[in-house]
Image 1 (cartoon, helix red, strand yellow):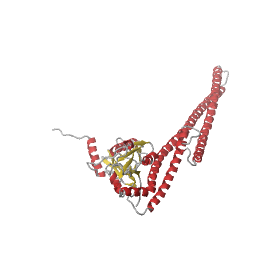
Image 2 (tube, helix red, strand yellow; image 1 turned 90 degrees about the vertical axis):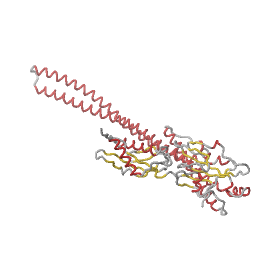
Image 3 (cartoon, one colour; image 1 turned 90 degrees about the horizontal axis):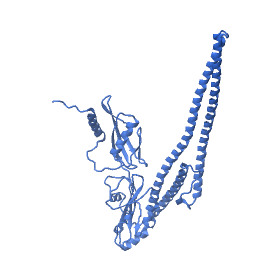
Image 4 (spheres, one colour; image 1 turned 30 degrees about the vertical axis):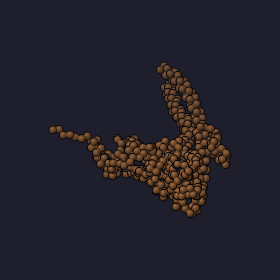
Length: 459
């Protein structure tokens, strides 16, 4: 009977699985699988098989908890930025292993243990007792999120907190609007700089707003200052280019002249050699002319070396001039990406402030509801979810109490005050609305329909 010997790679894989189980305490079955989103926190463990001493070594320097940033990336030492948003933990672990193997030039991929340490939060707003940000829990539904937020908003005799929240919401709304206005103007300026334009137009949605001309003047002044800076750098590079160009021309002329001198010296040497062979000239004359030829050839070599150096300097100066423009465009594009993300966050801030501000007129509408049918609980409740897609856009989804939530969802709770007719869900056309940036239409226009109230309160 022949004995069977397992290959080393199978033994290594089995040992790796055992080490991973010990490190992470992983279970065989998982109740729910999530794709990662910004603000998720993941716990990372890295193990490498070292064949030199036949053991698995942990990369303790990389072990720890990492947070996915707003762009959906995970920043890990050595591996750099790894796209995480939209991936499962298994897919992200494979991507990190590939990045580490490539950057560290490993013979094979290290073993990665990755698990979700903390989900991104969910946000609850509208007619709930305590709107705000709450930790996400697996199998969380709309109703569970409302329960965590203190339940539905209840009628109170003391309306002081409504006025307080209205003032706070008004301030938050004003701040968010001004912030978004500044960001839109900066976005227009950066786009103009990237396109190489000397000025830019005021964005259409800002035309006619207060102080918009002053804001444009500030951005235009900054644009000109940045243009002066880049022009000065390019001018310095051009001066260096001209200097090296003149040096190249001068050296080429000297080399041409030196070659003619070498030709004359070589002819003189040939004549002297002929006279020496006939005994008409002394050997000292031959040595002198020979030295002259050697010196001329040495000078030619020095000139050619200097010409090569000058040409290299000219090439580097031209390349530096190109790099100045490319670096400026790259920085502007990075700034533009950050501004685009900030505009999206500002739009959400505006929406939340609008929802909080609606409570200023809540008492009168609530009183009318109680006259027709006592008790807020008898009004038809409506639920909407704003969900961020993997590509950075947002979708508005009509939901019910049992709709499952995902990390980073924003849940909006409203009341339908139209009690004279049977209540019905919102129109299907409102079920999915996507936009690159959440707009004020999502925040307020739909709420203008009859019977919709979205109020907030606090304990």
